[in-house]
Length: 394
Image (tube, rainbow, N blue to C red; front, top):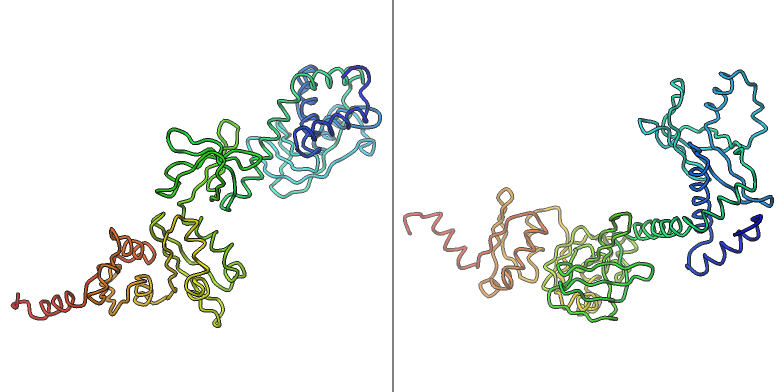
């Protein structure tokens, strides 16, 4: 960038870089302006808030001051100012504390420090800011613009792209995302390409027994979106209960429409899950609707979860009924609730089904209901009742 920098030259530069980086022109423009501001402030020793605008006459830098404070200073120095000579900005106070006065405007957010004691503003207050042309020659402005474009612009742009990417994916946190496996690390963790950014699917967040190769397609929950050393850090999960909830919401229209509410989801990933549901429409059977004919509606979800069995449990505000429902697929003949404990009685031939492989069925029922559950066969429970009624019989 040499000679006088014109508006068309700046526009072409912005369009070219936006196209090459596949980002919005507004993002490139902001990064360029920020780089020029940094160069001018550093070169001229300018303190406070500074912005630049791209105009037909060239690059115009302005100091941004709180109008009330600006006028107060002018009066103290014995000057009479015609404020109509200056352009102004409307802003909203975000905060006013030790860190200064933070004001949000259409041109960005500004922080004003060392304000006079008489200025007392609160969050939500509307204020006026004044744009004061910086006393600097057009040649100097062009010099600093060229310097910024050469030295700091790409750094500013890269940082802006990272920030935009972080915000975009932060909004998707808790939703399902799709990607391609790019790397399988020695630890078993996966690096997954989500298009604009890569995410990690830790080994512990993968369903036990599932394996992946490079270029495999993957569906997962965007579990965490954080910043680490200024960079977005995304963590995926396929074991989180929320992943199953989102799959059900996508697959079952009645859930998305609000006719059926999912109250709670508990999982032993890859083995079994229980989903507590409530119908908001008396005409809709939540269990039957979600399962479908012969379980056809829930089967694709089970397949996605490596064959994880999914029990749909009807909600009840009566503890005995809730616990009975939670023990599905076992048929329960009796439930006795004592505080947060419950004795559950099942037919003799259903005891192993009620407990489940490695105790998983009763464990999930406990997590779903919040009750500690002891399971008894009918014959064993009768013996216990007989002993309690006639202790000497033992």
